[in-house]
Length: 161
Image (tube, rainbow, N blue to C red; front, side, top):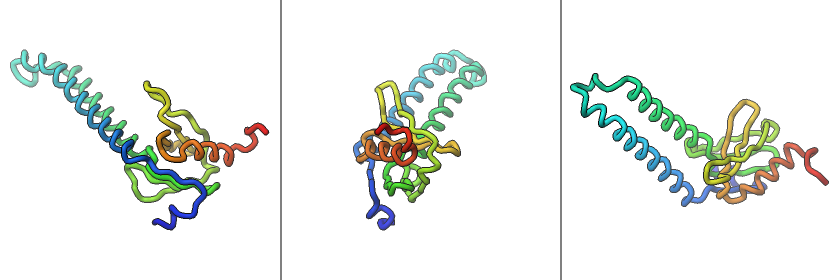
């Protein structure tokens, strides 16, 4: 595997501190939703003569929130690039969910979007023709040069001279 990651043009790695920050954010948001769910349903459960007395819409809402949390966590793990190499034609990468090397040809790239949240820009989203999306965190080494090189290699005619 190391021969795949050596001798290529451009490479980057997500810092361990950022990996831990993402893991802690997932844990914190999970705990927050669990606490909110408990506080929201506890008054209903404690007043009801039995568990069957809890209103169905409340249970559905809590189930949808927990399902959404699980889906967003899985998506983040599948999309977040933790290590990459780019040779000018192919992007080799690893994600949190799949540590084995994967690759995508530059020609498959459809567009590059900003990855934004409430705190501002987190990095970039690579969108491929088949619908797959990969997130490139701004804190990853060489993320800016990677995006610039991908844009230059994929859409050279849009660059001004």
